[in-house]
Length: 162
Image (cartoon, rainbow, N blue to C red):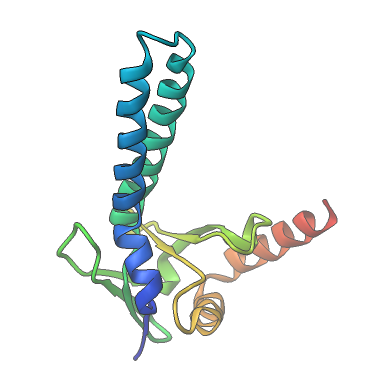
């Protein structure tokens, strides 16, 4: 069984990156609220800051739930562990994967891919910054059901034409 992990920088970024950004945006939000009585147009800055703060933290909440920071995989299964807010290990049999989306399969190679297991109804995300990402992706694609593999190839051909 081969283990795949994120490097230290990626792990810190994906776990704690929202904290300093949210802190600075909150300072700017407070400043905008203070300026509101003198400048009516500060309401636009308040709304923009709120949208950014909510969107950012919603994205990180999804990351905490779906992205393991340690994946052990072989030809039959993947054991995903070291989630940020979940203390459980998720085991996904590669043959049970019924959907793969995102990343290169959606035309955006720098985005994460999402694997859905139909039996346990679990979704796992994998960023490209994982050490051995290409090898892990090859391993997954070699061992998923043939119909899903064919669908992914067809989808990638369609994306390439567009």
